[in-house]
Length: 253
Ligand SMILES: Cc1cc2nc3c(=O)[nH]c(=O)nc-3n(C[C@H](O)[C@H](O)[C@H](O)COP(=O)(O)OP(=O)(O)OC[C@H]3O[C@@H](n4cnc5c(N)ncnc54)[C@H](O)[C@@H]3O)c2cc1C
Image (cartoon, rainbow, N blue to C red; front, side, top):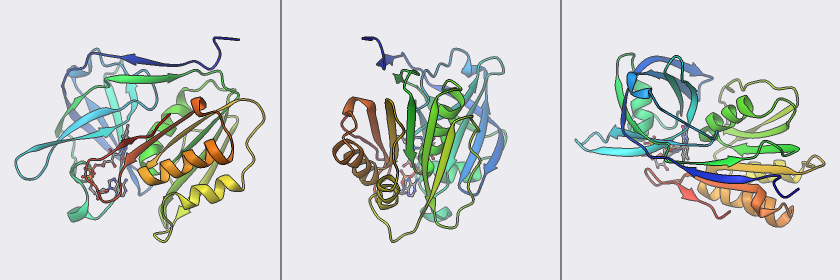
């Protein structure tokens, strides 16, 4: 059928919104879920689980920097928005967004913009393979919440060695494989080992990848070239770049 497996893009006008922290909730020891409230959330729309909003944060030197984060859960009736921050680095070497989240208290305010655009993946694939590191867990969690209940979902989640796993939403046909990432592994080696040992389900599937840019690129190459998965059914993004501040990469689709 011609209209199966549609992947469409929508654009939206954006405006800046000022939100107030309502609560801070640790999830395992690698994610902090922060709930925001505010009348400014009126009219907020996020069409896809891997949307992002821009957070505008103090850079510590009187300036402002922008960082991308996933709207993890939006409740239009209650006008609340949750964002989950992956915690990396100690206080002094964490980036501005992570540092802001580590110190956030109810009553603090934050300016956001977006989402400016969404990639909407049809909810008619037989299965979904969601691959990512800590920064991808919010988008993975949201997709687990939003996909139709009977879809088969496999999650490959890489977290730093020794971390406490955050709970993911449960589903009927869900397999979660946690990968223990040691500092000796580079460029997605843990994903490649796991994928090499994995047989993909029968039927047609969509593969979503988000992680450090070199890792995401290596995983995409493996899925597309080694496994021969159709490129149009893969979406890969570099959510951060090792050693670079505020960087992200769009990986060719
Ligand atoms: C579309 C999109 C959605 C995203 N959604 C989320 C989300 O929901 N939650 C989330 O936590 N992140 C998310 N990210 C990733 C987040 O934007 C980056 O991790 C960002 O760089 C963090 O900003 P920072 O100010 O803390 O650090 P930066 O100032 O950007 O970087 C400081 C240093 O920390 C390093 N660094 C950055 N991120 C990490 C990391 N995760 N682990 C280890 N080192 C790191 C950098 O390489 C740099 O050396 C998303 C990115 C994109 C593109």
